Length: 233
Image (cartoon, rainbow, N blue to C red):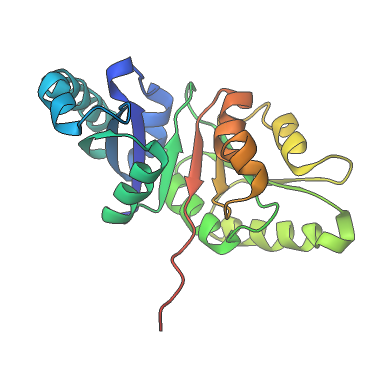
């Protein structure tokens, strides 16, 4: 089964919405409870002080995932670098995706942007596994210069792949707006976003990871499909 990592700020009371838990019912979930420490604070000291409270909260969240129909375990990390910790744990458990949590009710339709340098095949495979035969529709989204970017052809081919898996698919192609602005406009009417992981860019370093910016703007959860590791052979 596909593995997904769900990071939560465990000591700050961050929760996971029931709608997101039900959406991830077709996945193996690892809840990553993390607490970011000041650089001068040793992790062992924080663990001694907070471990019992954090573990109790993680056990509750993992049990809620199980009651929502999925499989779940958890890990607890005290760290000075959240992003590095998420990447490391995702590698260790071979997670296909990680989640930027957000509020949502029952998920009826996903928004899946395919704009930019993303691995469309990997995203579509994840979406098909995530839907898993349930009555959840998908809107494939592309924003950019119309013919030059090949968006029309990309959306048609991607839609055919998902329809072969029995998924209700719509497409949304926009040529009069930027990729990020168009995506935020398209979020309305959707319950969650599934997007691909992009290589680090100057823009992401300056303004934060794109997935977190989408989550902040749209409020709902964002599932980020990780890029495949390049082959060493």
